[in-house]
Structures are given as C-alpha cells and as structure tokens.
Image (cartoon, rainbow, N blue to C red):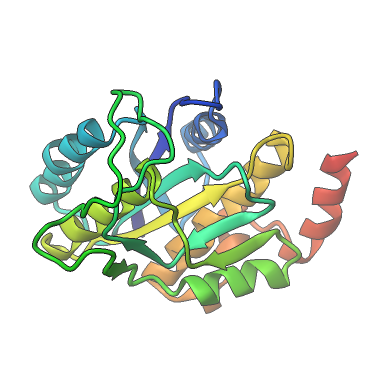
Length: 238
C-alpha cells in the first residue's frame, strides 16, 4: 500500500481561495470514512503558504523529516497547485532550476532568473520518477481531463516541486514525488474536480505499488466501473 502525503496551497495574488484547499479537504474527508480503498492511505497533509522560503524549510524539516523517521514502505508526495491558465489537470514531468516569480510571493519575495539550487546549472531539470505519461494516458482514455505537462512554471509551485524532488533523491526509503496542477473553478467546477482528483491519486498510487495496469482507479473507488466516469462527469457539469 502506498503512503500518500498531500500538500495544497493557500491563496495568493489573484487567487483569494485556492481550489487545492477544497480538494485536499475533500480527500481528507473521504479518507476518514472507514472504507476508502486498499491501494493507498493518507498519512500526511497540509496547506502551504505561497511563500517560497517558508515552503523550503517546511519540506526539509517537517515533511521529509517525518518520512525519514518513520518506516514507510511506499512513500509518495503529491503536491497540488492551481494554474490559472489550465483547462485540465496537468501532471508535471519535471521542475526547473529557475525562480522567476511573475509577482511577489506571500512573503513579498520576487526573484528573477535566479537558480533554486546553485550547485546545479541554471534552468536544469529534475524529473519525477513516476510514469506521468502513462498515468495521464490511462486517465485520459477513461474520459478524464488529464494531460502530461512539461512546464511547472517558475513560481512557488515549481520552487516547491524542485526542492521536493531534490530531497526525495537524498531520502531512503525511495520517495516518489509528483506535482499536479489543477484548473480554476471557473473552468472546472469543484464537484467535478473532486472526482478527477480522487482518480489521479488512485492511478499515482497504482503506479507505485503495482503499476497502473492494476487498475488503481476502480480499486480506490470500491468497485465503481471507470467506464462510467465520462457520463458521471457530464452529469456533474449540469
């Protein structure tokens, strides 16, 4: 069974209420139910401030400190963020070693063309070890609005992803990390996003504990036929 740590972000300039907060709240609520699934369990979650330095400290001292101090078998870190330009869910392939904030973060910091990690070349990339192309393909084939992405931006989302991937490389047991960008609620309603998110988490967990071919979505939904999802999502849009 995969052990999932999920982070969301709070509001920031132009986003008073971050949809990832509501999505995380929904996941936590579902996991409090006695059944949930046999594929993964939620072992940690938090809403992060959109403040790069504070996030960096929290990742090192709290999140990865917890992973190191516990005997997890399949730890997975899933970071959630909103992309105001997205029209679908985006599974990010890599983070870039570049901080070029389009606006100040919540602490007032606004770097421009700075390396996140000076020990590596500027704009070099750290890749997730999860098969995001396969996961996105499986979800898309089920009619879900999910794509593989090759641009995590250069704001706090990318900053978070880069530091998390770097720390994962230094941590044993092996930690799998992925960043998921979600669209604004004006583009995809919350109720639809809740269902998409649950399926994304299931396929991510399935890729870790036995491969996406195990059918993580159906396992995580307690037997709901994934072939019914397109019609269910259309109903949610009405």
